[in-house]
Length: 302
Image 1 (cartoon, rainbow, N blue to C red):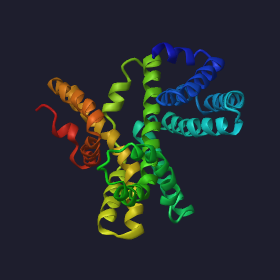
Image 2 (cartoon, rainbow, N blue to C red):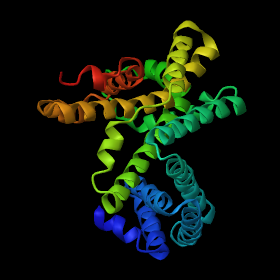
Image 3 (cartoon, rainbow, N blue to C red):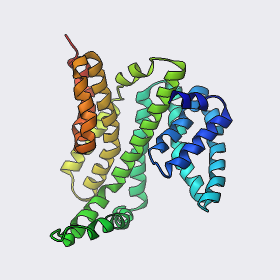
C-alpha cells in the first residue's frame, strides 16, 4: 500500500493512472472503489483543492473515453467517476482546511442526512423507487427456495418493509464508504509524510455535540411518532448511525491501546462482523454515548 501511495504522489500522470485503473478494476472488484477514491483524496490532502480538482477532471475525462470504448457509454462512466470522486474531493478539502477528522466525518454524515431529506422532498414515497429493484434482486433467490418456504408471505411483507428504509440504508453505506476512503487517504498521507501520526488522530476522534444530540432526537422521533414522520426519522438515523459506528471503533481502538490484553476482544469484534452483522448496533451506541460518558477516560487504567 505504501508503494501505491508513493506512486500516486509522484505526479499528476501517475495519480490519474492509479485513479482510473482502480476505478476500472472496481467494476469487477467493488472494494477497489475505496482505493480509487483514496487515490483522489491523498493528493488533495497533501497539495490542496486545486491539485485534487485537476486530478478529478483528468480522471473523469480518461474514464469517459475508456467507458465509451469498453462498455459503450461515456455518460455512465463519467457519472460513475463523479459520484465516486467528487464527494471524496470535497471531504478531503474539509479535512485539509480543518485539520480534524471529526469535522470531516461530520461533514460526510451531514451529506448523508441531506441526501435523505432531498429524496423525501423530491419523492413523497421513495419506497417505490427501491421496491422494483428489491424484487428483481430477491426473485432468483426465492425461485430456488425450499418447497416449504412461504413465498407469498415473503412477497407481501419483506420487500415492501425493506423498501421503506432503503433510502437511509443506501445513504449510510455511502457515508461509510466515503469515510473509509478518507481514512485510507489519511493513513497514506501519514505513512509518507508523518509516520506514526495516523493512530493518535484516529483513536482521539471526538465528534461535535450536534451529532449525538441529533442522533438522540431522530431516535426519539422514530419511536414516538407514527406514519411518515417515524419513517423519515428512522431513515435519518442511518447516516448518523454510520458516523457513530466509526466513533465506536475509534473508542475500541483507543481502549485497546491502553489495555493491551483487550486486543483479542477487538480482533473478535472484527471477526464477529462477518457472521453477526447486528453487532454494529452496540458499537454505534458506544459511539453515540461517548459524547456524554467519555469511555476512553472512564475505562482507562487508574
